[in-house]
Length: 142
Image (cartoon, rainbow, N blue to C red):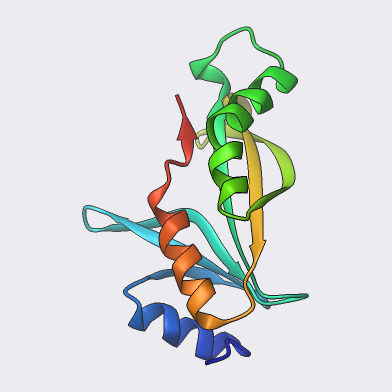
């Protein structure tokens, strides 16, 4: 079975017991359920330019006061890179995300240092296997 279209991929994920959080033109962001709430799982299936599974892991500045960005990204790499690369994932990007106060957007509450890992998935079985694996790993480094 090929995951050639958004509809086919969503149906395959649903049949596999995976919930969709949101989707855009070529990306399906997956969900986790926390009690009765649906939340972003930090895992997505990318359909273009080539099918792949991606996941993001972060370290929060509030957990490591005084460390710079390079040290924060190193914390995430130390925690997950070996496991991810053994599984065939490669680091595909870094991102600093400011978490702002919803009541006062000028106030930064925390900064997340995120690393995204990706793995090409040539077929539906590989995609579903890697989604299951990626959903099971911790997304925050403590």
